[in-house]
Image 1 (cartoon, rainbow, N blue to C red):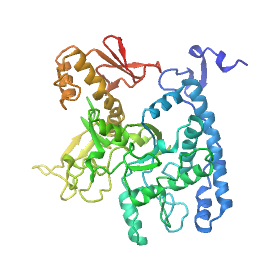
Image 2: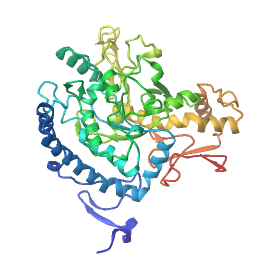
Image 3: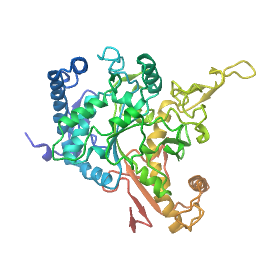
Image 4: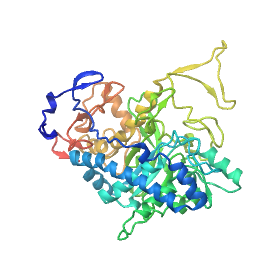
Length: 481
């Protein structure tokens, strides 16, 4: 039998359930591993209940054994992927330049640990397993030498506010949403379980290392907020919803030719700070985002795959219009109250009813018919936010530099690096639509990322060359970023 490296992959035919097909060699590389569930996360809720209620160390050892099993299997997958693509060096380089390695689980509902029984909560079957996050963080730490204080966890679950409030009133003590993600607030247990991620990482942490995965837990419990650039020592948890009480935590980025939105506001922990504000960039250097979804079916999206965890899960629930921190009319959520319960302004279906924000009832026209608005549905909502990080860069230094260096600041308004018209990109696209020649730069993206709603994105070119992906070439390639 031939070694895999000796196979002619371009002409190899495989007999698959969909027929005899050639191997798909295009798009992003994929690496997988098959694990035995019984040896992995199955049974952890029962064991964890013993740990919490009985301080059972044997039960904790069983849990760590299961996470060790996940960790070793992840190495088969991620280690081989790194050998094939070299992605580890790119991650290390971006972290070296100040970015955080930010893990985004799916915690659509946070009650994985029941606050009353400490057993399996109602959300255990729909949320990302915390044990998987533990194994992943350890892999990046041990294999790529990325310190825990260079990592973070972020989530924008809609239900966290109500659940944290309910637990607080039930048990007579305040619980922050960050503590809810931790699964522990002082001596109160309940929520997702990141505290136990910390505990596992601390147990498996080499004594020679100075970073401490437990640092950051007290900040979660107290509700202390530190921008990523200021959190020098801690492994921080970020509730990506919380933009209302401090609008400076969010940044709005244009999404050219967006299906549902022409601009989107996200937490700067994800999208990074204002490219024109050095202090803001220092506080919010951006992130290398690790998407850790839950494989499940969905009533409207059928199979959420890896997309919905970002395509819906990154939109902030508490994001007010006009950066008014006192407003309770939310950009993406209903109802207009202190704690909205649903990101109902995000199109989940092609047709949406217009809602009266005062009554929370559908609006009728003068003929008594409900007013329905046609949208691009959930695919549009997801594609808009998935393309946003690309255009976060696109609207940053590359676009500005090309305009100022080769176009005398025609769109940005000045050749001065510190002065840029906020409507520069909109002006540029309007000019392109009238046949004006594009600026002299090309931004390279992975295959299948060069179009939005089947329209080519200006100045964007698809490539399968990993050395070119997410680089900008100026003036015919004479200068490369």
